[in-house]
Image (tube, rainbow, N blue to C red; front, side, top):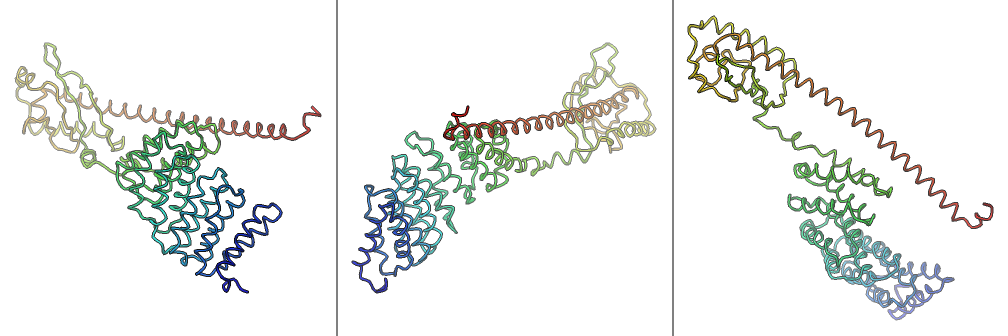
Length: 467
């Protein structure tokens, strides 16, 4: 008699016999294969009694029985797909009942079952799967259940073809608050869920990204290495999926935090830290993306802020200009060197146009000309310090005093050359430091391998007899 023609009582009998055989190690493999065959060939009308048989097993059963009952749900959803849409809630409830199981293999089977249900039963709305998992996440007090629920929710988010972004944006702030509470023990698993949510590109506003980054950076210093690894993965996914303009504002803090924690004592954590660090370094800076219109206009017109001051000596002459603040000019160095000769020629032409007749009133000039920032235009035909249409010779008094302005260009050239020299030295130092760090990391890895080999040799029975 075929399975499709069997009454529901006969189906329950066969399933119960298979479950009893799972308790015996000798018949475990045969019973598992038979139960999987029943699940694949199950007709649509027998879904309910079959699920009831799987749900009736309790925690008193042996671990292989509990694990196989959950594993069959994965096989059932893969074999029948959307035909199980009306029964998804029942299947998710059966999984939730197993999440308190102390056996990690049973909880791993629950994660696989949720992933299989989400992948193959696509006609059911994603909220039907996510909502009971989210409710259990905020209600469970058992550490095993908290770990299992968080990993199941993460598997559902990863497996969903079209995850509901609005639901995930509501869940993420609640998860960030929950992870900071002492009552929630499975923090690494919750960080895995947060990373899965971030990977869906649902973080769209600055406040949510700020809370996410601050929480992840905080857990980089956790005593649990799994939490440190999960936090680094969250930062890596945030750098990959967040909006570039938003991510650029948090680049400095994230790079600094990852740089300080990149030499973790656990190898897998170090690798994850370095991957996240490289991802954040690839994020463009704010200055690279946004250029100031004022800065570009000032650099193109050739203006340089210069501070001139009058001498307090008796002759009232103009002393050497003092450079209070120098802004980095985008023009090449050669352009600054050519300005000295250009402004001298301008002064000569100006002298031919307006010959010097009389020396200006020095007390009045001293009163009005104290200390001010003057825009120095190299391209203008008349050098004007802000006193209307009067020429520069009428304000300064002599050509000798005007030549002091050329010293400013020389000083700027010298400062820019020193800055470039210091930058080259700094780059060489950074390169040598990086090589030293890489060499140190390779030595540490070599020591870890030697320690692992020694521990394996000591673990072999009978080794001590010949020592």
